[in-house]
Image (cartoon, rainbow, N blue to C red; front, side, top):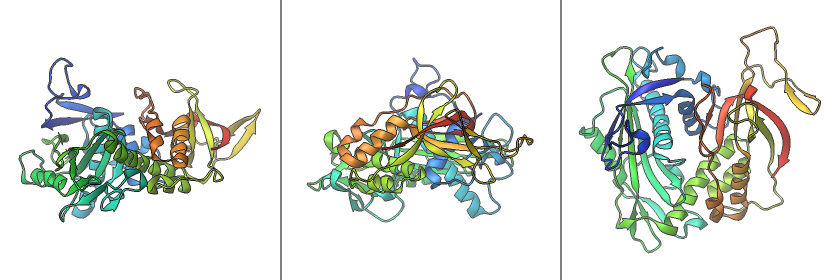
Length: 387
């Protein structure tokens, strides 16, 4: 299931291939198609802890507010009955759109909230570097990474009111990038590339306005660019923080804490998990570490038949009762993340990336970080393993 949204770019000397309408022309496509399952996936990773209100991406909690149109358009005059609620909900969606856009179109895979690194010495791996606030006011939302040596800042906005690159508000969002600085161990500042991704949402009450995503790439202040092994050190922090959030969702608090705080887990502490396989093409046989959230009525009845685990229907006579939603991470990537928690940040460079697939079902989303979300019927538990 997809929705169309208009696109505007600013300060992109070279338009990424994924955003071009014609590969040979350095110009952006006027519209993008947004897979709603992938948008939900990013929203879930960004906005919820262990359990979201409704974990089924086919029932994305904002989906009920969309009009049945080809474009991304919200019922009434926005989500919520008051201005403050509408502002909060639009900002949540703005963050999801930012992460989706950077992931799908700019090859950025890993995200760490600014609060995880701001105004504190980045633990042992960062060797004396600091990310500091330079003035009061809002800062960018994320440090994000394409890889351990390609680090970015990003700021996400979502709103119903007008957005333009020449507005005073957009100028104020650029200013946010001047409020943080990366300092190396000698006290010199280092600059990193950044992105502002602001999304205006169209509503039923203003049919002449279309939803539109605005993207720009300002630079943070600094004497020279952050690169080489020093970029690796910060990249390792960003990627570890990203997987700490996933580990928390997998009910692995020790693993999450180790990744977030930079301590090594001793070998005597083990991580018991259940391994599942995907049952159909195009992911048939791929193994994931994870579990499921029930659709309702508590845990599903489970039994073993000829060595296989079977989920029974809670009420086989009813057609409107779902089983649940699976969340997990590809097994080899999970093993590599555990190795980082045991062996230290230098092993982050060994973490692989999951090969993206073309969307094949509206309720399933898989990202390059190896995480996947979808109906539990597509997965089968096959083994309990301790790493």
